[in-house]
Image (cartoon, rainbow, N blue to C red; front, side):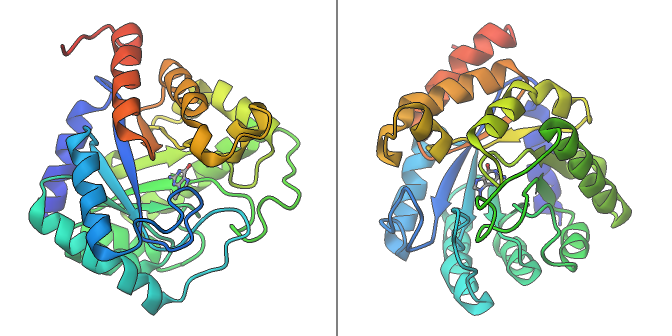
Length: 285
Ligand code: 9MG
């Protein structure tokens, strides 16, 4: 608990001063960009080491693909994928770890193994025991917006006013978290780019990051190599979406994002350093 509190405090002390870069570590054989390359234990460790050397502030480790159409992974399988990786990284490196899961048992074991944040793409909706697990551990939580489930979300995303609806849902997730005893300073929010959204919904949400910031919580944005970027670039595949991703990252920072979740840590660290110098007025060089 003390370890988690100190790690969260250290992250909090940097928020607002510079953009934090969260590196994506997929322990999934079918992740849409990594293509399973980092699915083995040894290669996950090597990838973690590389992202740390490249300047990641947080590693986000997940064992269940959240790509559109993905099927759920059984609990035991997800545990086997993520817990040994989290344990090994926590033992070897001094880097904050978030666990990307919607299952409270995975979160509970991950927090015991060395994670300090739960990144829940369902905003703690898919598993009713999640708020209690996060609260009891004194952990941080990323409350993300999703319409539907990963399996169904891109079938026909529909909103009357996407910004107002995402904002209202996030507000209700926040209230549920607070009610469960999660302190407000441990909560981050995320509009869930690509999670039950059309290209236009994604663009509108990004342009309206200031409206989400107005809820009063740090905002995390995850656009890395997502399909709307490929679509806007005439159908480019995930491995050719770096420049498009960096454009969204830099503008997200300008619009107030506090944390960006990315595959390409080195390029993103360089881009946000410049964006921070321009937008936050600081220069750490
Ligand atoms: C797991 N995952 C995939 N995309 C994501 C995003 O945009 N935000 C968060 N918080 N998690 C994500």
